Length: 164
Image (cartoon, rainbow, N blue to C red; front, top):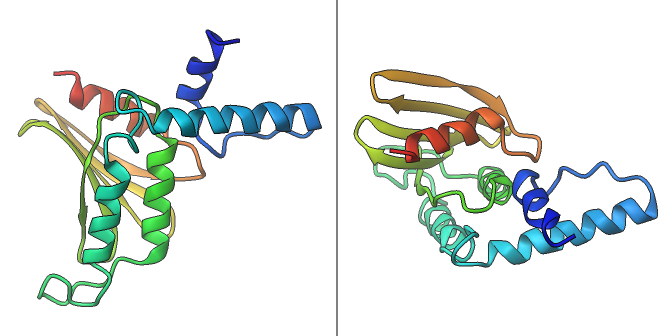
């Protein structure tokens, strides 16, 4: 059980359970508890590395309209909550992104390795993840819906950007 648990916890987001029996729900809840506990780890978890604190700081700084002096919309509670859920859904040991706010009220996550190896993900209050990546001479961009699990396309791009 101990050998299987970390791999299960690393590959599934917090909302991935579709358990219906009491036993299945118990196992799902225990796996979720274990994953949340590992998120506290400085080695594996984004919470242990301060990512959630950084996110909260950006949210608090951008709550008011015109937070940038150029008529920016405030970051909404929905954008903050969804960004929080996206972070929780990322696989354990994912590198910590930097955080920012956009004038349209979205929150941005950015993984930066070099000027030609970077990924930006914009989290909308509606649950859409808009992304753009530079990967050397190639580019990748698109939109993925967020339903509680980290989209494979974005997780793969994080790994590709940070692999250099």
